[in-house]
Image (cartoon, rainbow, N blue to C red; front, side, top):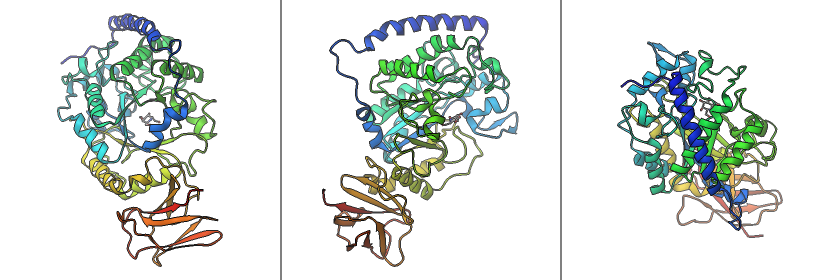
Length: 465
Ligand code: FHN
């Protein structure tokens, strides 16, 4: 299977197609705008409601980079697997050959979504297009996609959209602004595709005739989407004003769409300075591979994290975080008012790596008993206790006890508490636990043995004020 390289003729064709699609999209854009008398746009709180309730989602980095899987010309390439084209300085025409070998016959969208649901997750964010520009859907504006460039010839995003609809899981797309394949974007920067000091004079043409028509395709063919998760925003060609304009344009197409802060330059601002949304385009902050010590007060935020050390599949990255660590991280993040977007990097055969499946299943077993203490909760009103974490919901505090007190006494700094009842969340009978309250703390007498070795949840039900 030979795939077309981006010769001038192909580029000319792409631009013409892109211009045509842009005109079409622009034209039908009117049909997405609010007509007179149409319902008012949702408030941000209404729009964010499902996302805030979810607290836990799956990140999927999948694409051609899974084929080399971290090795190129017999050499192991350092760094995250999806960056192999840049790190190994692979010319576009060479990288395109990976498409000939991408035939993930093991891919089963329904199996993926059932695993997500069992893990207690409520949304999936999958790479529609990562930095290499390869499209996991049948795009009308390029042949650099799963339908035209690979022997697989199945629309991965369409199959995933169908499975998500069936299992009521929100479908969301990661989309890279930076594009190492498109000649009007960063392809000409080879071998340093990530050259932050250079601009492409044709970048605006890439945005208007390629990137925006593709985003419209994603919203119209697979939508309504939960989230558009942008990335690759750090390049010199992309600015905060462009991000704000793109945010407004997308919300015009799908008013209840949620968009992360990397649609503009907010990744730094929102997290570094706890800026409000007004300063930066985007609905939530995106701390990556880290959990902010005290969350990001005043803004919605989501920690995205790998289970090992790479987002895209690397055959030899076995540095897996333990299930125990991941379960406690979920409670830590929720106790600070954030969401946890946990990543898997599927194999070139379309399988989620076994160690990832094992961790998702272990998290699912914990969530099957304790999801009430994560989903729909808000940040701890008692800070970060030494014995674990705390989340809150509906006049209840959920005490996530990582370190079960050997003397059976759980002390909670909670002045003036008006406790109705305390019980072990895992106890279906909700047998009351002895509680003593004084002016500044509550002491709960716990059973001798922790119901869960990793994170046992004690419920403090308060009397309504
Ligand atoms: O460069 C990407 C990287 O490949 C990965 O997609 C992460 C996930 O958030 N984002 C960028 C690095 O910040």
